[in-house]
Length: 202
Image 1 (spheres, rainbow, N blue to C red):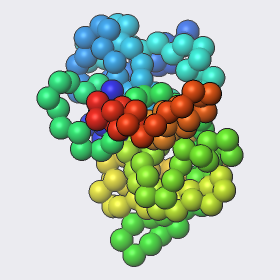
Image 2: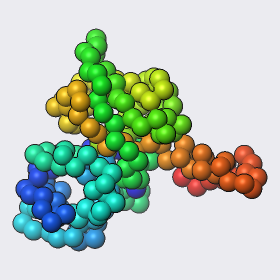
Image 3: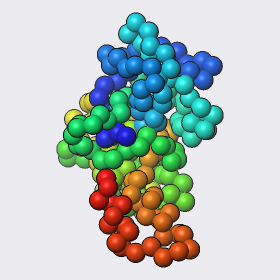
Image 4: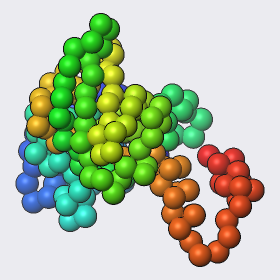
């Protein structure tokens, strides 16, 4: 589990045979979970200042693999007792979105993302979304598009400052929206007492 707050950039040393080798200040142990551009990956090797993570076929089919070069976002999995400062992020990429528009605002930059229509039900105005692992608040939604405002601090400390129109990014929708939708698709009755109980456990 993650928070969607990027702890540092890692530098891609290589990507071959489905293994991504990264150089970072962070020093994980073998078996640790690390979110790389929002995808939860397992550390399979640790070297001198580097570590390797393996990308399964499922992961490779879902992520914007072309962005696993140069610099990437990394976030170690939460430890018990850590502060939850972003929102609950699982590191499970739901889909890809394409950057349609980037426009400068008074004290930030607006990004308009286009995502597959079937995921619109999980994306709500003022709700949460993770874009390449970055926890963000959705400003507005229109059909299969959403608008995000990125403040200067986030532009400086994430890859948003480098993104261009047409680029693809990894999207994780809100966990609670996905679970609630799935629950209410079931044939048996699900009441709000059940929903309250699930929410109380997180």
